[in-house]
Length: 124
Image (cartoon, rainbow, N blue to C red; front, side, top):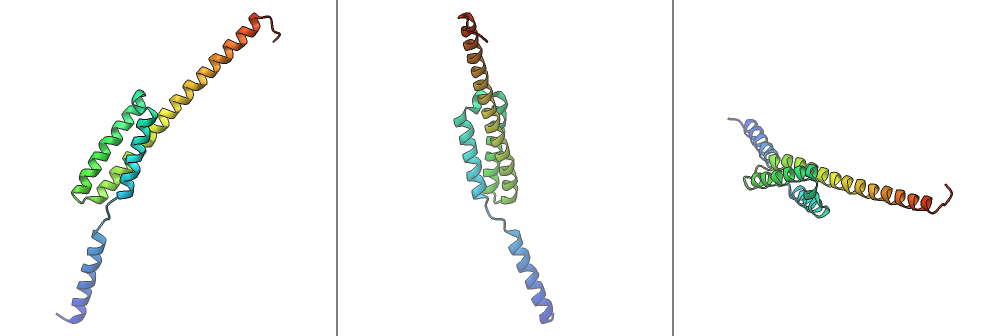
């Protein structure tokens, strides 16, 4: 074997070795945990749609943690992306429900005040 073949083979193997390592998705893991906590704190468990997406996020987080333990970091990163999307959807659904409830309360209060003024003979 000549020196050029050995050097080429060594360079190819070194490149493959570097490309084969995929760093653990530690930041994504922290982001998903934070999003899950936020969803829980906002009350996602009391909204059926939000509760479903929170549950999916928690399941995917568990699967991602298992993948990290097996050093399958690329798969873990994909699971964490899905988990974060589900957790953020749970947050959005919870906020939507809260905003809708507050809007309904404001409308009811406005209607009650209007009715009171009309009963007292106030002009329209």
